[in-house]
Every structure is written in structure tokens, then in C-alpha cells.
Length: 287
Image (cartoon, rainbow, N blue to C red; front, side, top):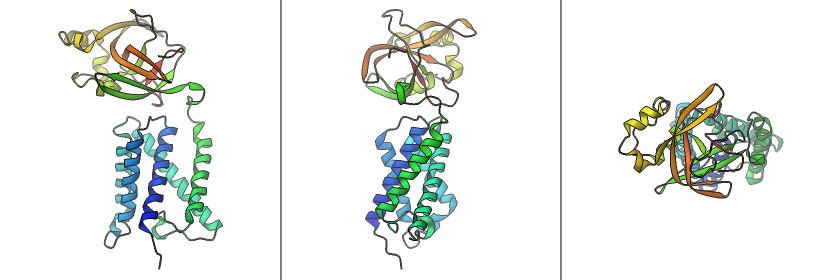
């Protein structure tokens, strides 16, 4: 008979779930909120513990496992546009970790628990070895699939704050972004407009179609644009001789350890990266 210590079981599952979720988000360039990832890891550990209880074996059905995985991803990353891709990475990481766990167990001639659940049968050392191998191998294999990385400062976490509300984004430092604030001459931060919904709850229309027609949108907001501190910003790009972007002044922009107050932020109607690796652009000299 296999004896399982529930406290050790929960701790190990929580730790591995947290590492897998955090690693999936990091590889996909998804800014992570530690408490949300911890919440998701706790949900996964609680689900695994329930499957051990008498009368709860039905939770081991593949449909229940898939539902638990979806719940964990939603808890960790919410309704992110990259949720499917992050979920795919989480699945790959989980399968890789399970395979490496099996290899370690075979090498040590130690059986894995029935049902494939992570338990103390391998011991803490074996589990940590498998986790380290999983992280190292997949970082080498998958890390090459992303053009921009945090190394060298290409990708940086950007926090925009307005009236006590904040939103965190992953920004690419783009030396080709020469947009400047016409009042201060400082670089303008360009953000996918839909990402700023948390900062603008009073603005009902913030979809791509509306942002693609900034003049009409600003006209519809006549009377409230002053309170929102909205304006039109001219720009030039490849294939665009002279275009306009809707721009918003935020109270603060924090990026790379620096802070800029009263920062002008342009709202892009289209995604800024093909694969969703980042959702904001900052000038080469920083925000």
C-alpha cells in the first residue's frame, strides 16, 4: 500500500505547478503577476489532492484534467490574447516534465505513483533533478523560437498608471520608434489600444475598428475628451505618408527602473507583434 503525506504532496505539486506556469509565461513573453500564478498553482495542487480522496477518483478523467488546466491558465493569465499559445507551452512543459520524471524514476528504479500524479515516491531530490532538466532543455529548445528576449534589454516590463489604476505590459525597445510628444519632445509610448481597457473604464469603445478611425472616435467623445486627456498624434510609417493615432496622457510610465510622469501614450489599433510577444513600443532611449 502506498502512503501519501498530504502536506508534502500539496507542497510539491504547488511548487512544480508554479514553476511550469511561470516558465510558460516567461517563454511566451507574458508578463506574470506572482500572486495570480501562485493562485493558479494552488488550484492545481488542490485538484491533485482531491483525486486522492475516496470517492473522488472521477476527477482523473481526461475531461476533468483538461478543465483543471484551463482553470489554472485563466487564474494565472486571465483573458490574455496569447492564452492559447501560453496554454500550449504549459502543456508541452508539463508533458516534458512528466517524461523526465519517468526517466529519473527508471534510472533510480523507483516507481512513479499510480495515476501519474506527482508524489513523494521519487523523493525531493529526484523531483528537483527532473524539474531542472525540464527547465534547462526547454529553455534551450523553445527560447530560440522567440526573436526578441529580455536579454540585452530588448523586452522590458512597462507599467502605465492613470488615476490610481495600473496596467502591466511587455514592451519592445524599438530604436525606430521616433514619435515624440509635441509639448515636451519626449518619446511617445505606443501601446495596443485594447490593452488599455483597465485604465479607461469610462470609455465604452476601445476596439480595433474604433481606434482605426481616431478622428471620428474623438468627435464622438466630445465633452469628455478633456477629462480623459485624449488628443490626436500625427505619425508616418511605411506605406503611410501621414496618419493619426489617438493618444492618451497617463500619470506615470515605469520601465527599466525609470519613471516618466505625464507620459503621452499612443493607442495602436492593430497588434504590434506578429506572435503577440509584446504589446508596446518604447523609444531607443527609454520611455
